[in-house]
Structures are given as structure tokens and as C-alpha cells.
Image (cartoon, rainbow, N blue to C red; front, side, top):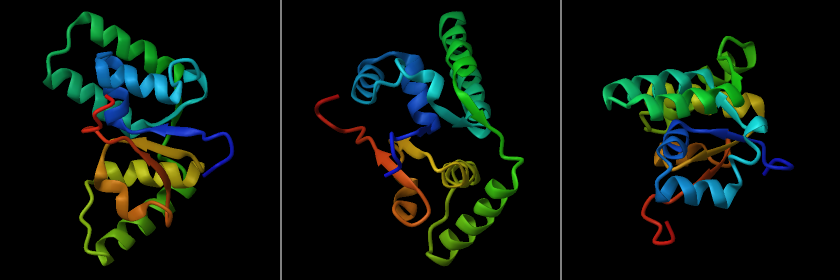
Length: 147
């Protein structure tokens, strides 16, 4: 793991924080996210995914404002970066050779975590084959009874 665990939040983690439900509160408390939100990272891809999800789910004004508030405070990492672009190509190639078909947005997020040397915080299993090789990730079990 990277010293001081600089996190890159996956889209599903951002959504849970916005919802503020039991799982979101658990994730926040366990990782102290909202207390350290000004040091948390997200990929610009996560912004697009989250905005699209908010529209498709018909989020009202309250959740939309919470989303905007959180996004303003996160460190946004642009994918228009040589290290991220090269990591994307390598991770996509590695995944395909390993027989794993990843969603392209997940490849971008993994490439961002790799290039920024941040720990990916996710409840998505699509990154499992990359853990320890291309990225460090902390997986949050969505079925954890503690949640």
C-alpha cells in the first residue's frame, strides 16, 4: 500500500456517499472519507459516470446538490495525461490477454489509480485481476453484514 493511503474513489463509492444510506455512512466512517475529502482523488471519468447515473435515476435537487458539493472538494484527475494514457493501453492489453473484459470506464479509472499511485477504493470486483500488479485497491464487500 501507498504511504498514508491516498485514495482514488470509484464511482460506486461516490454514489454511496451521496446517498448517505447505511452503506455510505459505513464507508465514510471506516475510511474517514468526508473528514479528509479535500485530499481524496477521483478520475474525471467518475464525474461523467456519476452525472449520468444521477440523471438516469432522476435524482432530485437535494442529492444533485450533495453531488456537486462533494465533487467541488475532490481532487479531480484528468485522463489527458501521458502516464494515464499509457497505463490505459497497458491495463487494457493485460486484461484482454488475461481473458478479462473490463468496461472501458473501469480501465480509465484503473489507469488513473496506477498513474497517480493512489489506492482505488471500490465495491466493484472488476478490478480484482489488477490488484497487486497494476493497482492497489481496497475492496468493500457490499454484502458485509457490518454494513
